[in-house]
Length: 380
Image (cartoon, rainbow, N blue to C red; front, side, top):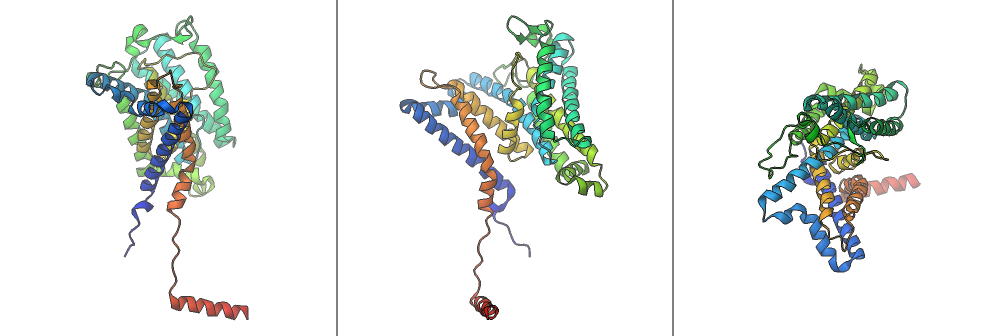
């Protein structure tokens, strides 16, 4: 008869507990930092961060509006984490997600503002751009044996400079403000269709980006765990030589993995910028979404659905910083808390090893006597 495993021995349970522990420890350490900065108002500051938009609980319409904005702003970090965990499950570390996200910004905004395309084709352009950028990284990995981390980092900076150069054109950017035009004003057809906007306090930024994000996560979950294709990708990532011996096309799978991962990153950019909730500004550093996605992926236990929960949590705490009283605290304290939580994610495996530590089995008296007599014989 099969022995029942302990509830706490289940991988899913361990992952959830480890992630919750990271979040709780991060909040506690954040509170300690607030105490060091201003002891008299530390509790007030922590309550403001954790309460976030729930401070408007007496005004349901306003509450739902800010909830909708939080969901929209969580979309890119969630999808970037999905892209990273997809590649990671296949044994590849896609640190180039930031660059793939950047070319997604370039493709979606240029086609919308300069070419006046409909939102669907802008979205498609971003997905294709991200996929091609990921495929380049995959090609170097598969055929030139270049580590995907090195290739990804180089491509990140190349994508940033190309994006800055192309979008600085007057057809896309208001040069006096160094930011792109409002899509809603210049090309209304480039804005994503709305989604439950009335329910979310008439929030014009609530679009189909939110349900698409959930659908993508479910598709990734099914592909990785329920399809032959997903099995081949994971097998190739874990042992390329063994996969090749088994008849799998290892090089093709590496390129495909990073191509799909890049497509998801490009989609993340389009689903965010085509809501017009934010305008692209000339940047001197690569967008942080790709790197934040790494943390969210691990905080979510490298699980597609877990990444959604982790992404919402990270965005919730980050946005909570704007409710801090700036007379006493810098709003970036919330970012510091997230950084601490991200750092603590590195201890998830350590936490799991403690839970999985095998118990010492106490030997029976007869067996102990037998072992002692054998030991004496050996000594003689």
